[in-house]
Length: 307
Image (cartoon, rainbow, N blue to C red):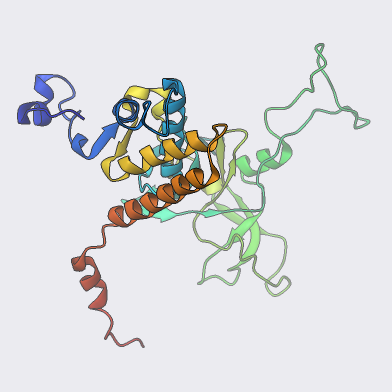
């Protein structure tokens, strides 16, 4: 990020939006990283020489991706309303989820992942159970499978949780706001701890790119906290990295090029790998923000009596 005046920083020079430069000084752009590496770390008198710019750009992107997966604490948050199909389409830059919550009455209620699948794909079949195909030879699929349809309309079993009710912890059906059960009280034992949660549950269909929710989430607000790869949907001009990790990115590029280059001695590659690892650890420590004030707040409770 080049040096700019205070007016350009706070007001963006009068352009819109005025917050475009806020906090920008803590980051360095991808183009600056590539240019700096080509000028400073590459040349006839360096270990890395005669390398094309596109190779340096590729390894720089890979370094930033790895940082987003591992070291960065940059969590993106997206709020969407869950419709009647009980689906939440994953964001375009989604890589992995951190937390999924129900937003209601000004509070976030964390949801539990249901490892017992609540969705599936289905094929249309005739009355002899033979799979049906179209004129192009492709399998004909319905819009929803029976399992997905039961979940959407609310006819799939779920756990009823109400400590003030004798049916607490029993599997039943939620239909139009009323609960129905297969067993009388005392005729069914045990609690499925995998889904024993008062809040709704979800299951992620990674291939389909959606999150499938339980029936209770119909017309509710879901908040997804997720991790991206930092590539900003392919716009290289918007890709940045925290300055605390700048030296690590250079070391990552240098190691990746030396490691894939023919004729480089192993001790040189090993030294570059160790340097890369050491710089990553140092950057993580710097970014951890271990402040004495925060430690003091936690230590204040060390003498608290636990009843």
